Image 1 (spheres, rainbow, N blue to C red):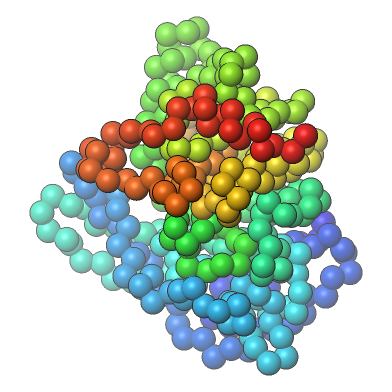
Image 2 (cartoon, helix red, strand yellow; image 1 turned 90 degrees about the vertical axis):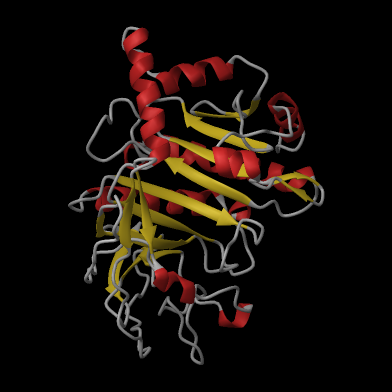
Length: 359
């Protein structure tokens, strides 16, 4: 793999990940870009003890442009995009409309009981392929491995930034989910705090270890699920299963069989084994109702500086589609109270997905 670092016209970093060592990445971004926005403002909610990012500049981000105006496609002689090269394998660059960044401005007190501080951190875009009309499910195994190399590289690099507490790699797919660009891509958030969901899970893992002679909660969940009826697909190094208490109509968790804290810690064999298993599950989702399923794919990694021994890298994949023409909306109970009601029995969801997995 060849890794090439360059910069866009406004100073944002861009990194090419190529299979070929002779890939030419000398193209320059000549667009007349304006100044970069200042970092968001973090406000503390004393009622939930959570930090909320206020990022007004994101209101102006590009929204569902036509294919010939896609900012993630390679540049051409007649049009410049976010990627100066006329082709690429995988590319990562700093988000033009970040939720977190190192470009600080001035911040005033919000009043009340809310503390205010800069939204320090970093947000990156990961383009999985130069092919605008493709999808992650259609990537070759080799291409998925290159994406994983990029995820691992960025996890290690972002974890080394002062003040970053957690690194989150994810993909949003589908208009129903709220995407703003159709091109196959994901994002990486380097948070200046440990996220609320991770805090809850680590607290549960900590209590479990105290009650069970130091055993790891995630490892025991995986072990139990591998013996049960909700396994969707598996190989020697990974297992994909629907969790017993799934929140979403179709939700699949993918675990490596070896406990590792993050993507950077995966072995070459584990990265290779992930690719065919994951894309088969994605195709199974699409096959359920013969439509491109909207989904969120979220890597859960251990925090950068605390309780890493409790963490266990895994991916959570879920769709809000519950039936043909029907979506799972987060209405009163879920949105107001955080109390989920699932319309699809997890065992039935696993059976339906198994029937669609490539054999």
